[in-house]
Image (cartoon, rainbow, N blue to C red; front, side, top):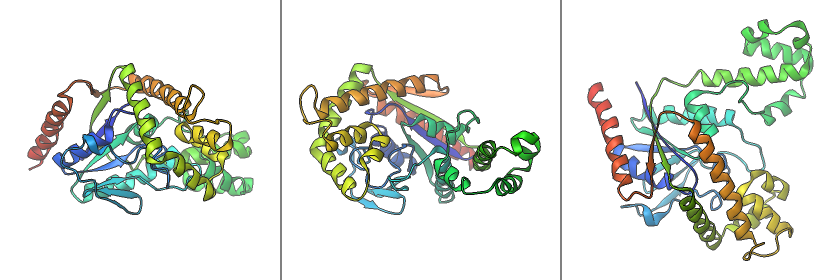
Length: 325
């Protein structure tokens, strides 16, 4: 049985730092499960760069490849796989990440799925119900150019079973045909997911600690050039409307570039507003992950948490290999 290690948790907990450390331990490669790190050029604001002060024995030599970054010899996949002008979705993520994980396994490495986008992690490791599946805007745009008859033919080819279950009224309804094709396309993707044995590691901390780390990180990223990054993206054609859709840091940056926010510091400044937005995001992440099962949680405020994680992963990984051999 193939293995996959999952490192998850709210923003600001050092997931990528820990994952890189574990990759050295277990001969692994990272697969980012972050809904915005998939976009090209969104580097500083999405935290693609790990915190070098907390990574031991890494010189942080960074090379950028096609859909991945290589950090001191360790690949982080699913970076830079989409144009920020386009809407990305969970279906594309599942399709692309499946191929990446299969390739990692073929090369004898351990896939380490790391990120804070709970929907992406759940979709990849468990699949999604039809009700949870979001709209695929790019697919819908193409299908809207089809005639009703063309959509009927497409659905018959993609999913004869779903076509048979539809009544006459549904078969004549373009909107329902589009949704059926959408669901059927993703269903085929999910069926390619192999039966992995999964170990989930969750990183967390008291809420006030997470808020403090978020606040410090916002200031650090401003100093790293996050505002200049947003200006470059806008100059290259990323509209402020689209930047707002990307949310969080980039949503606030769009308001700053448009003049809605006039200051960087102060109670009504960019920094304060951005920190508040991310605090809200942390709360939503905590709520999401609280519902999930089979997660081994570790509090990052405990000084020896990383050692405990290493011990757990080491036993799980090497025991599996001993059994296989």
